[in-house]
Image (cartoon, rainbow, N blue to C red):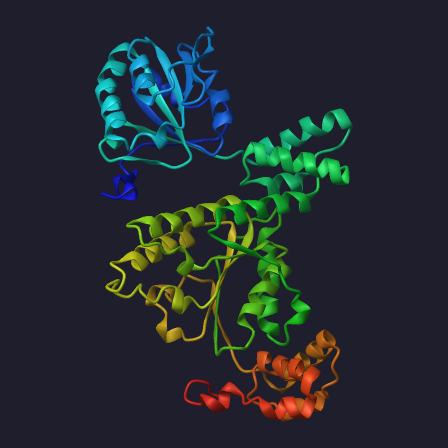
Length: 465
C-alpha cells in the first residue's frame, strides 16, 4: 500500500471545534475524559502557549529532538525519550497529564507506532491523561481515526492582528493601521509579526503593501496557485456595460457595507476577445490581488492526492482574504467532470469540491473564462452559480477604434483609427498582433499577413456585429 493511501482525511462524523483565540475548548474534552486529540494548526508555538494555560492538568511537550519536558505546573526534562514509541509509553505512567507531541504525525504511519498508540489509549482514559498530536493537516491512519477528536485551530482574526500592531508600535509611538490588519488575515501570527516588523523597518509605519507582499509569499510557497499582477481597466477597450457592472459590485467590499458579497462572473466568447485581460482588469478595479488557479496543475497520479490539493488550494484562497480568483478556460479544466470515466472520477471529485466551496465562500470574486459554453458542465450554468454570465463578442466599430488607440499608446505605433472600418471581424488580440508585427515589417505588411480567426474558422466564430 502506498504511503498516501493509508492516510485518510477525517470524515464528517468527527467533532470539530473552531478556535477563535483565548483558552481552547480542549479543556472541555479533557474534563470529559477524551484520551486523544489531534490539533490541526499552522502555528504550533502559539498553540503550545495556549495549552500552558489549561488548569487542572500537568502539561508536557515532546518532539524527536528535545525529548520530553514539562511546561506547567512543574518543570522536568527527559531528553533521552526521543523515540515516539517511548514517548507514548511514558504518558501511560503520568496521571492527569497532557502530552503535546510535535511531529508525531510523521511517525504514525509506522505500524509499531500506531499500535503503541492503540494499546495506550485505554490506559490514558483510565488515568485521566491525553495524547495531543499537533499537525498542520487533519490526517491519521484509518485505525487511529475513531479514537482521536479533531480540534481545528483558526488563524488569528483581524482584531488580534490589530492588537499585535498596537503592541509592536507602542514603543515606537506608531499607530496601528486597520487596513493592514484586515489584509493580514490569513497569515499566521508569526507571518504577520514579521511582515509588520519589516514594514516598520523599511517604511516607518504599518504598510498595507508590505502585508500584501507577505501574502504573496504564502501563495508562492504553496505551489498550488499563482499570483498575477492586476491590469489597468484603461487598457481594456470596450466592454463598458461589464465595467459598470463590476464598479457597482465593488460597493459590497467597503468595510461598512451590508450588501451581499458577489460570487463572481463567467466570461464566454471566442478566443482573443480579451477575456483574460478583462479578468486582470477586474482585479485592478476592485483593488484586489489576482490569484490564478490551474486545475490541471493540481492533478497528481497518487490516489486522493488531486482532491487533497484542490482542498488545500481553496483553503489558501479562504485564508488569503479578498481577492479575484481567475479560472482560465474552464471547459478544459473540468473536461473530465462529465462521467469521470477517463480519470477514475478524480476530476469529478475536484469539481464537486470546487462547486461546494464556491457556493459557500465569501472572500473571493471568481472570474471564469470559457471559449465554448457548450463544453461546460451544466452545473456551472445553473442560476446562482455565478452572478452573471457575459458573452464577450468580436469588437464593434467603436470598440475597434478604442483598441487601436490603446495599442498605439502601448507600442508607440501610429495605426490610423480609420483602419477600424477595415478590421471588422478582427479580435482585440489580432489587432494587437498586427501592431506588434508592424514594428518589424511595417503596418501594411503586418496587416495583410494576419488572417483573422473569423475567416479561418467561420463555423465557430460568427460576426455578430
